[in-house]
Structures are given as C-alpha cells and as structure tokens.
Image (cartoon, rainbow, N blue to C red; front, top):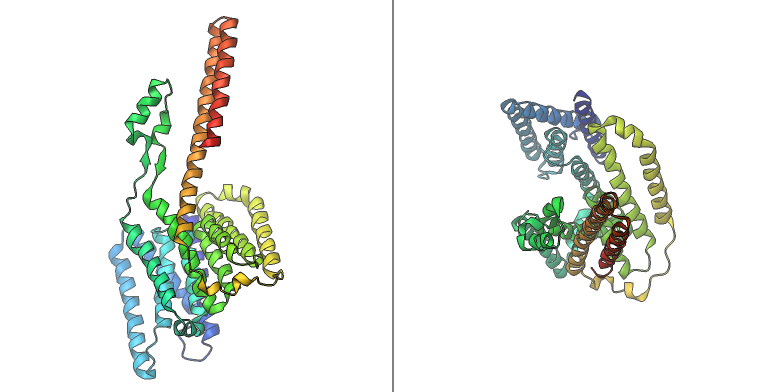
Length: 395
C-alpha cells in the first residue's frame, strides 16, 4: 500500500515539474508565477488533498483545496489590476496542476487518462502563441464539423444506455439451444452489444481526427497527427490507428501516418508501466524486458518513418481542404466492425468449448460402450464439430 502511495506521489511531482519547466521556459521574466519547484509543490499539495479525502478527512481536504483556490483567485485579481492584463492562462495552469496532482490519489478516472490530460495541458500551454492564428482562420464548414462533434460526444453519448445486452435477455434463443442439446452455460451472460461502449469508439475516432485537425492548423499536419495519436494511444490505440488508416486514403505521404500509428501503440505499451507498477510490482519486473523491447522497437520504427522523406503529393491532395474533418460513417463502420470481431471471437470460443464437450462424450462412449458404437459416434461427432467451424466463414 505504501509503495503504491509513494509511486503516485512521485508521479504527481513529475507532472508538476514538467508543467513548471514549460512555464519557466515560456515566461523567463521576473515576476512570473514560478517554475519547476513551485509547480511541483502545487502538484504535491493537490496529492496531499487527495490523500486526505480518501482517508475519510473530506472536510480537511476541502478546506485545503478551498484555501488554495482562494489564494489563486486573489493572486489573479491583484495581478490583473496591477498589470491590466486579464489573461488567465497562468492561473488556470496552476489550478489544473493542483487537480492533476490530486487525481492519481482519488482514483476517479483511470491513471492513463490522467497522463493523457497532463500531456494535453503541457501541449496547450506550449502552443499559446499560435492559437491566435487558429481563431483567425476558422471557416463555416469547420464550425459545422466542431458542432457535429459536440453533438456526437456531449449530446448523444451521455443519453445512450450503458447496458450490455446478453443472450439471457433473449430466452427464446436459449430455449432453442437447449432443445438441440446444447447448454450455453456461461455464454448465456455473453455481452452481445452495449450501445454506449459502441458509441465511445465513434467518439474516440472522430475526436482524434478533430484534435489532430486543430493541431494541424497550429503546428502543421505532420506534427499534429503525431502528437494527437500519441495522446490518443493512452485512451485507445486501436481507435487512433483506425483514424490514421482512414486519413491515408487522402494522401500519398503515409510515412508520417505510419510513424504516428507506431507512437500510438507505443503509448499503449507505456500504459502497462503505469497500471501494472502499483498493482503488481513482481509481475511488472518479470514483464519488464519484453515491455522495454516493445517500447524501444516501436519508438525506433516511429522515428524511422517520421524522418523518412515523403513522395510528391498527388493531385487529390491539392483539394485536401475540401475534405471533412472527420467521417462519421467511417467511424460507425469501424465501431460495428469491432463489435462483430468481438462476437466472432466469442463464437470461436463457444465452438471450442462445444468441441471439448463432444470429445468428452466420445471418450465416455468408448469407455462405457462397445468399440463399434464408440467409433461410429466419434466419427459422427467429429463431423459435427468440424462443420460447426465452417459457420465462421459465412458469419
């Protein structure tokens, strides 16, 4: 327990130090809100507040957070009146660092998502000077795309039922299997589809496209999809890879897309360090050599493809601005495909279990029956088992 707590404290300190380093490098003048030491202490303060809360001291934790937030508000008010500069970037980054420090302790959201939020914060802070250019060139079609994504992620998703529809919710199907002598057993609780989980895949794929497009307007397409895919890999490397594969249809310069996909998968490997470390240190140590090889290999291949020269752009790329920021139809098709693939694996597992059951019947018949009966039954059941796998070809 203590090792897990120490691990989270160190992680929070690293978060704060990284944010402080960015602030210190972007605001070298005196009178700034601090650097690595200041932001490390802020993240540590957030961690302490989180620890107090989970250890049944919510009043003390709330008081600590309230006092800290009040100090930041007073700091902003006095600074704004003195300098006549009403920007809030520094103050918001201070509050965000406090929250980032508290989140690992509270276990409200997965640790990999906390890491993604931290990367996103540092990225936003580092591109402050370029965001003005983005706002100046927004078109009507871009606003329409952003509005559509807001509807997809903020309006539709929350209202979809987070219910897994299983076979036991269809008693007629179970009765049919029982009538033909097949006991589904644990497969009765097999989840066929969950509307909210299915839509989350759509939100992730379209979200990576939107995030990548925004970054593209700020730092260029090549860098944007590299950063967006790396961050997206902490959430879903599969969705990030699908988004990049879809984008490859509109460009002949695919090397940077391959590099971005590799970085996305490398991020998914790094998640294991974050998740397995605090839960099972011994298992992580045994897995460490393989993980290091996977991360290093993916990283080196990503660098190779990102540095590789791209061919001349084809004519279809000259009109790239005419393309939609994201394709809802493609995202839906992929989400349905993922569901179908999962069902295929479930069907395969069922067929393997059923085959095992049939083999056991062959053994019983050989032990308890005559040789003639056992051989003929075994051949018949073997034919049934083999032909059952043929159904996967037409499923």
